[in-house]
Length: 317
Image (cartoon, rainbow, N blue to C red; front, side, top):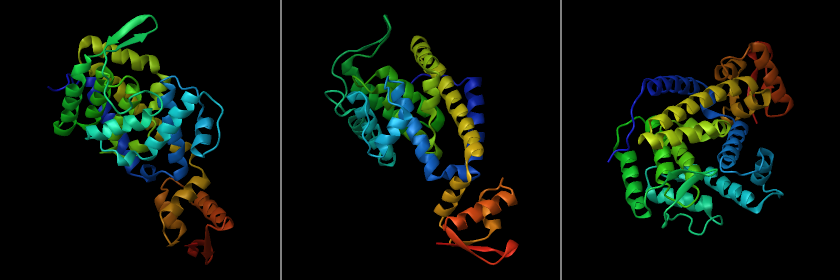
């Protein structure tokens, strides 16, 4: 049975906007961000997806843990972050179509945090917000069948990847297949599904915007539950993805500094190049800024220069 949802004008408008922004990303170097920017966005992703679940560690503390430094904080919070770092560093090892891979990711995320990580729940659960029972999950005996159907939907549906990722995220929250870790698994697996078609999503921290609009996130889940279909949640998530793409485009264009440009260009491995070659990669760069970048690169001994003025050639060291 297919998960129920409707395609609304708002959904179609969001898909159009997202597609245009992904095109903009893919049309330039932003689809291959510098290691520094990729690292920054991964830290934001881990921080935000765990903050939604109540984790109190800061981005600076998560950065320290990535660098294998000691951090003072609640043991549970530290373990949550360490587990998440392992999973997000190995995203490409997970198969978004595989239920076995899904269970393995949950085991890695939740080891040391719950008694049976990587196993579906064997008891009934209800979701309580404050003093209110918000959601009663399906009976425990239905979980394996519901998850198998959900993975069949992923494999067999011709629906757009953007829609499928949102539906999977919602259904994971609704089915609540694990005693704990369902939210972070829904967000993780949505990332993997999106990555299967759009690699940029490996480093797009849309969880940051979810964290900032947490009330809307839970409201869209609750409203979808009441209506018996994921339409409202799809609308919410697509708006989050759209805004996150807008933010990353603005962020990259605004703060990509000289050092970031040089780091990215060197990573391309071009052994010999001119200022024109450099500007062909950074198309919105002025000739004066390109010259300053290249002068700085020579000073830092990243490459050496031969010739003078417009005929200068740069040799990568």
